[in-house]
Length: 346
Ligand code: ATP
Image 1 (cartoon, rainbow, N blue to C red):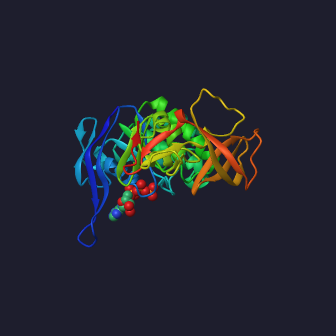
Image 2 (image 1 turned 90 degrees about the vertical axis):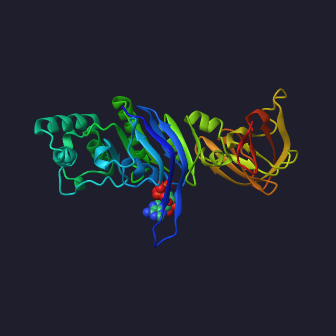
Image 3 (image 1 turned 120 degrees about the horizontal axis):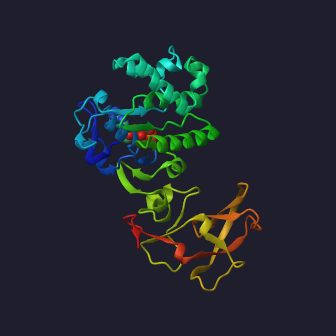
């Protein structure tokens, strides 16, 4: 099982005809052997670029990508022993499932008996045994996705790269396939690098996650740490649904500090008042809209001129739209950030 290391990696796009654009800035990270690391960030932050550099589909402008201790910058993609699963599956439409899965092995000149063995094994892992003779058009989106994974598995690569593999699936199938990938990871214990813009996918799948913004790492840690101790204001606003409230103008807090508080940590006064917990209290927020999400309600309010979202248990009596409500924020649940640098203040 292979580690993947990025050492001072930079990527600059552009040629003589176009101005240069730096997509990746001094990227340093080590993916440990057998680890499932998810790279998450908004559109255009450089996720696919990083993955493509590991796969060898994109050149590396500066720095090194190291797989299993070997610098692979100049190594042909076919010699990197890495399998990539794409968003659009990239199956051959005229070939059966079996032929799609066997294709790379055939090209590599593997013995037919060994190919059959590997295809059978991958098909059982993925539950594709009944579908081996079908063509891709005779499969559902989720089944096609499994064939794409099967094609990667049969190669027994040192690492898997996934580029938004779930984004073409409907919500239910996404959750299901996410769980399949987790199981697959546990079963194969192989290094996986998974790219998504979906923070929930990242949180649920990752051993550790890299949150990216503008070609740079904002934070690289376990989902728990990223959620509970976001390193920057960007991470605080990106991870969590709905996002953490980031308040710049709260009466009583010094200029230059931003108060971050998750919607579930804002309470309406005073039913559960606990005098032992130090709180910001007496703040007033104006209720603008309320959404019922089943088990909970999201109250969209305004604190001064800043938006504030409060998450309430749906069983609790909701406030009235247009009312001004008193809110409390327990100080031990506040995240403080430096307004200028965006960095967490401890
Ligand atoms: P998405 O989630 O939308 O796929 P991403 O995070 O994967 O986005 P990349 O595709 O890696 O982002 O692109 C990173 C940045 O590099 C973007 O600003 C993009 O416009 C730019 N870029 C990507 N490919 C090229 C290219 N061939 N030439 C110039 N710029 C490029």
